[in-house]
Length: 86
Image (spheres, helix red, strand yellow):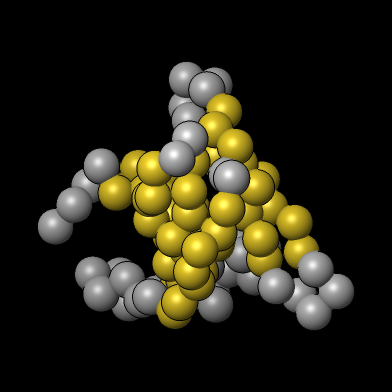
C-alpha cells in the first residue's frame, strides 16, 4: 500500500456543489497549480472504511491522482482531507 501524504488543497465550489481543486500546498510551503481536472470518481479508503473521491489532475504537464478522504460522520466539523500517494 502506498504512503499517504496529506496536503492542503485550495478548492472552488460551483453552484451545484461540485468541488473543483485548484492548487496543492506541500508542508514545506511549495504551491502547485492544478492545470486541469481530467477525471473524478468515487474512491473509498479500504483501511479506514471512509468514503472518498479520486481526482485525476494535471500539474506541470504530469498526470497525478489527488484523493479526498471524507470525514467521519461522528465529527460534524471535519468535512474531510486531501492526500496524494507517495
